[in-house]
Image (tube, rainbow, N blue to C red):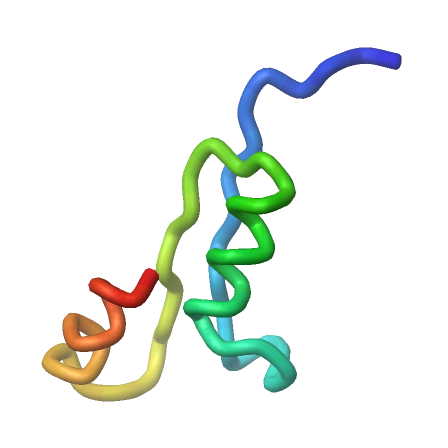
Length: 55
């Protein structure tokens, strides 16, 4: 089996509603992701910045 050198995960709560950004980042990190990217097209900038430390 070929190894994957890097895994880039985008957290998104618009495409799915079961997990929060924080939960998605935790699951991805546990799974071995290299990069977690916060993705949110809707909402206010201050709200998005407020979620960032939890991720």
